[in-house]
Image 1 (cartoon, rainbow, N blue to C red):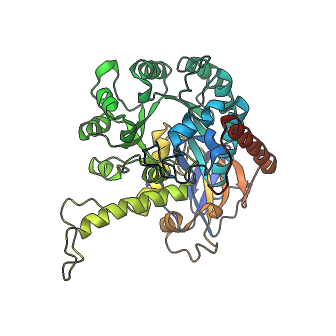
Image 2 (cartoon, rainbow, N blue to C red):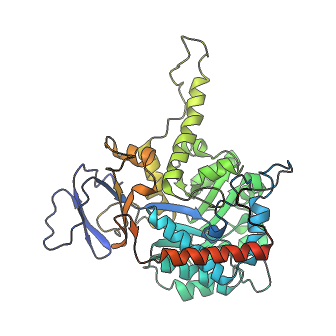
Image 3 (tube, rainbow, N blue to C red):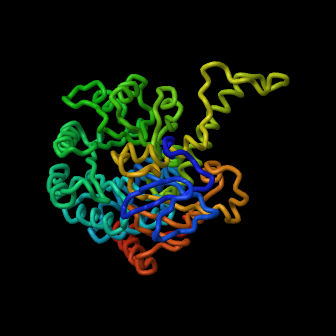
Length: 453
């Protein structure tokens, strides 16, 4: 994924300690330990730039659910995400629930080859809730960015001011696997998000915010992008979704050097609005990819990449077909000048790796197999029944593979998954703890469990 290093049909990757030392054919490494990767694709670990890990106990709770109740009375209107997760389950979380949800989600993604995540943990009801989230990210043993977002506004919550304590207590060093960003949500109101952005920038943190037109955020982002209220959009901003935003604001975001994370499967399913991937290509921008919520969709990178690939190509292919006639001979027209180009598997892989690292401010550490960067590496099995015979490397990864092909995962030089088995984790015990948390949350919230709802 580094054009300066190149791609090799056969080569070696030399790792010393945490870092990649060399990538080239036939490295003579003396007494180094050897991982035989014949028949495997060796590539950088995947990066997820937006995942609400605290919601793991509600996995698949909203398979039909929309972002909000649309008044239709349909199974998609109720239960819905805003009412039943953010304003429902989230209110009854204890610190121990935060911990096991965060840890289990992180291990699950690690197993799927996601070596870096931005955890958007909107569960900071108390300092104890915040500390539990950070501890879980550290105990997971993968690279993570802790997103300090809001709580439900209860007495005792210390958002956004507690960011100073968290930074001092947990992130005194920038040279660690887990780093920090500041959540500055626009829907919280000008007074709150202005304080959050200001504190985040005082602490030298990136500032991250959702931007969803379907949630009524367009006027606020328009105002912020114009620089009113004393805030300026800059390269330290990462915006999530960016659905339904004005052309003028898009240009401001681009010109300011801000980044955008797209959660395309969720945006399509939960009515956030059409994922703005064509708008980004029009403006010369590239997104990173994110999973968002496991209440509704899988959080593995293969789902995200195929979602981006199929959605963008569906839109462009229909644009091209509409330029012709349904009746031959002009039923297969040549794309007119100005038609967006079709997304390629190589580009999607970049979205899912190096773009994600850059958007989290970690491009100097991860995202590519580059000498000097940390050894965040995945080995993908191409001899498996769903892939063999291998004919195209990026095509196999994006179009054919799933989490079962993730054979080995290395984070900062440490092997975390080996030959298909996650290491250093008692998964049976952790699953029981997650189920106990699920049972507590359902009971306390007053939601009846129905496996066939």
